[in-house]
Amino acid sequence: MSLLEGRAARGTAAAVALAGMLTACGLDEGPPDERVVRVLMVDNPQMQELEKLTARHFTKRTGIEVDFTPLPENEVRKHIHDDFSAQSGRYDVATVSNFETETYADRGWLKPLDPYIAEDQAFDQSDILLPLQLSLSGGDGKVYAEPFYGESSFLMYRKDVFEQLGLEMPARPTWKDVAELAEKADRPEKGMTGICLRGLPGWGEMTAPFTTVVNTFGGTWFDKRWNARLTSPAFRKAAEFYVGLVRESGEPDPSRTGYADCLRNMKRGKSAMWYDATAGAGSLEAATSPVRGKMGYVPAPVEKTRSSGWLYTWAWGIQKSSDRPGDAWKFISWASSKEYEALVGREFGWANVPAGKRSSTYDRPQYRKAAGAFAEVTEEAIRDADPRSPGVQERPAPGIQFVGVPEFTALGDKVSEELSAAIAGEQSVDDALRKGQREAERVGAGHRKR
Image 1 (cartoon, rainbow, N blue to C red):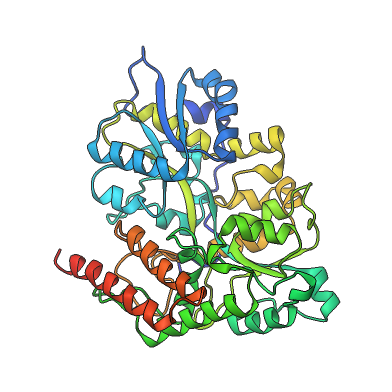
Image 2: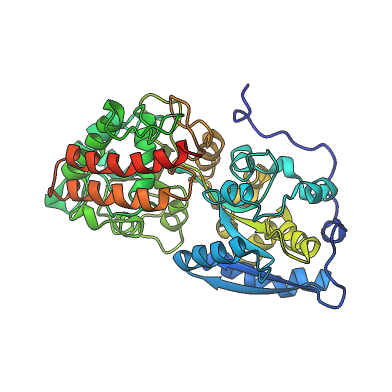
């Protein structure tokens, strides 16, 4: 059994009380007259709930105040990069994703968390899903961040529409299956497309689902020696498939369609299928959703690989220059704990729990009841995700829906712009890939010189 298969090993010791957990880890305590942890974080609903709960629960128990600075995603990434690269110490903790963690760790911007994990047994590191543990580690194997929540990707479809049309969704579909089903479900005269897929340019938009298609079709952005492979037969086949599927059975004006647009299309009954983030299921199954109870969920489609779902997490990292890392760890330990998930369940409802990071979440009867339609397939998707080996060949850097190097943000943006133009009919797929190959060769050459 491989490291990424089966359920994560469970600790046998019983969990201690929350108060005990919060008083653990006496390492590097902050100055007693300044018990303030400064947190720079992405601004989203889960973080907003955390901010509402912190003073009444964490600060009240520990005496440690938390000063939050929430910013939109694009802004927060720049601010975190600037502050942590300078090691200014202005912020103690920041939200980092699995895209940045290893790079930040290898550059010495993050403090390794292993000593705190070892002393804080109540945190139960073994309960963190193994793919997330791997993706939040540095090249030295040490842990540099702890997840607040995680997600993968899967295929969402309208069970009622499939039943009306006499269609059957395989338990584990291939992309060939999806293309055939999309063609049959596509009914423009009824205002419903066969599938919704992102065509909007951006490394975090179209590039994310597209790269998982590349992986399972046998392609890769770079081989293990950093040779660009965008014009290889496998990469070209994946691109032609993706562009063709969107053009033939996808949404109107697909080159302008992103995650939010596909979510809106599904909720309004305008798409029969949608391949995207597992996080989308929560909105589709919300109490106010018009399609609640009508959706089905199956693993990400495959071709040559056993699985193909991506992996993403917003996690907490401690700036290496922080002068209060002990208090910073106490905050992280609480915010990523089992106890915090239970608190959210009681205060805001179990469907709002920042899930996707712990095995124990999926054992909770309350959570399984609230998220029963998608909980099991989400857990499976995250467990099956392998950030170190997502395809059929060795990779020079980790990542499933991205290549885990800083240059990929610009490269992913550029290539997605070219492919989006192909979707819009402004150029051929071959022309798009030739342009992308030139950009990728520059990135690869830079890494081979290091």
